[in-house]
Length: 158
Image (cartoon, rainbow, N blue to C red; front, side):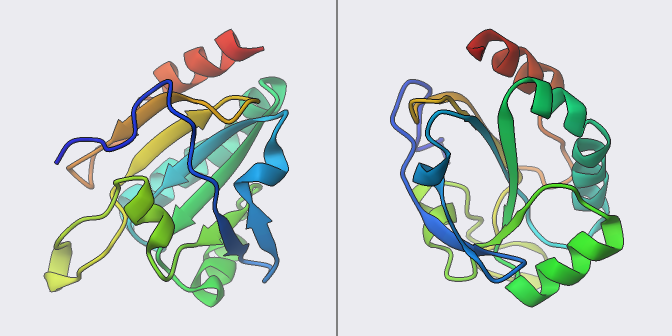
C-alpha cells in the first residue's frame, strides 16, 4: 500500500486525547515543527525501543523547535501507563477510533494475532506552516524509522 500523504502536502489537522485526558489538535502547533510517530502498540519491544530512543534524544528535537507526539490506537489509559513506565518525555495520543491513522494512510489491514486496524510504524515531519516535509510508513513492524533522515529534515526547517 502506498503512502497516501506526500511530502509537500498540507498535513491533515486532527484532535486526539493525550494520556492526560486533554484534547490536543495539530493546528495548536502552527509555528512549531512537529514529529508524529505512529506506532503499533504500547508495551511491545520495537515500539519501546523506538520511543525510548526518542526520549533519550529529546534535546535534538527541542533544539529543532519540534514537538514530538507518539500516536497509537491504544486507549488513553494504556498510554498513560506506558508513558509512566517508560518515563517518556513527550505526549502520547490515543487514536482509538483510528480516524487519524486512516487519514495518514498508516493502518494495517491485519496485524499480528489477526488484529485489525493497528497503526503501522510511521514518521511524519510537519513544518511550522503545517506542510509535510518527511513521510515514512513502514510495512514491517520490526523496522525503525530513519531517525538520521528525520533529524536532518528538522535541521533544514529552522
